[in-house]
Length: 143
Ligand code: CMP
Image (cartoon, rainbow, N blue to C red; front, side, top):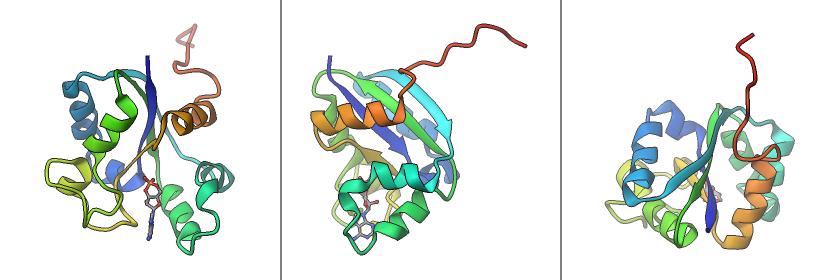
């Protein structure tokens, strides 16, 4: 079954939108297969956004992603990559339709709340980068 990588960015966490975002994906009918709450360091953020390293906004984008904890998730379901991007809305909140996450909650392209993989192949790469240990961490003891 198809999977995608979704990340709630630091502004989405700080603004208390984690529950709202998860709820939208759950209500659509997608399955949450992996989730973690983490601070990423600069080299990791640079690796995630390596394709954008030549862009003038690259260092600001990396500063933003490392500015606070993010929620990294794996979501699964039929056409979840393309449909997930529709739920999220256009990259620039100025262009994202009302009813989408960015359309409802964001105004700035540099603070656009959420990331979603843009293709099945990038989803595969991003899931491998963010979840090298697999989708679920096991804890064998309470001590
Ligand atoms: P995301 O879906 O995570 O993919 C790349 C990110 O780069 C995008 O969301 C935005 O956060 C950021 N981005 C794209 N274009 C610009 C821009 N012109 N200025 C600032 N950030 C941008």
